[in-house]
Image (cartoon, rainbow, N blue to C red):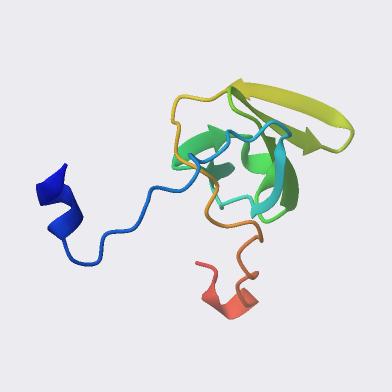
Amino acid sequence: GEAVRRLRGLRPAGPPPRPGIEPVRVQRRVSAVGTVMVCRQVVSLGRPYAGQTVTVHVSDSTITVDLDGQVRVIRRTTDVPVRNVKANKPHKVSDVV
C-alpha cells in the first residue's frame, strides 16, 4: 500500500470500457477484387460489387453487409474495435489500373 502511494503521476482507475451493445454502422468501399476490410477482417463480397460503397453493421459477434437489398451476415473472427467509420474516397479514374 505505502509504495503504491509514492508512485508519481498515479491516477485511480476509471470505469472499465463498456462492451458495445448496439451494432456500429460503418461504410466501406469495395476493392477492385470485391473485398472490404472491417476490423482487420477481410470480407469477400464478389467482383460485381467492386467500387461500390456498402453499409456494414458490426456487432460483437457478426459483420452484416447490406448489398442491394440482400443482407449478408459474416461471423467475426477478430475482436478489434472499429477504427474507421467512413469509406475511403473513390480513386480518380486515372488511378485505377
